Length: 89
Image (cartoon, rainbow, N blue to C red; front, side, top):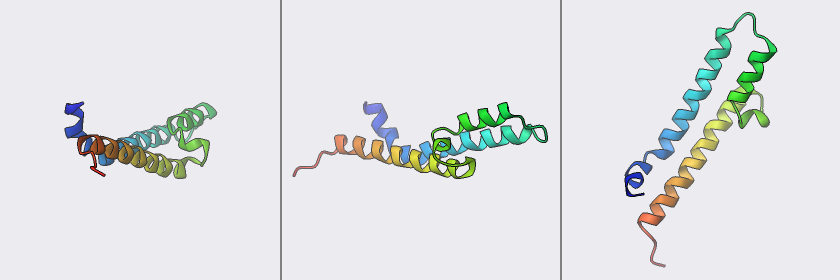
């Protein structure tokens, strides 16, 4: 856990960045199949953008995924920070 604490301060920035790159790569993969996009390609694209595509169409799903990753990274960062420096209240 001590090794993770040093790196956890970058988690709120790193996690959304990785999610954005994953979503961007999925988008480029779909565009690589132009002009013959099939239903299978669209299905794989929707699966790659989970959980955002459960609630939104693909473009807002990418934003939702990045926001969700930011929230998860912030929660983990705050939890690790609280364990490293407990408040004395």
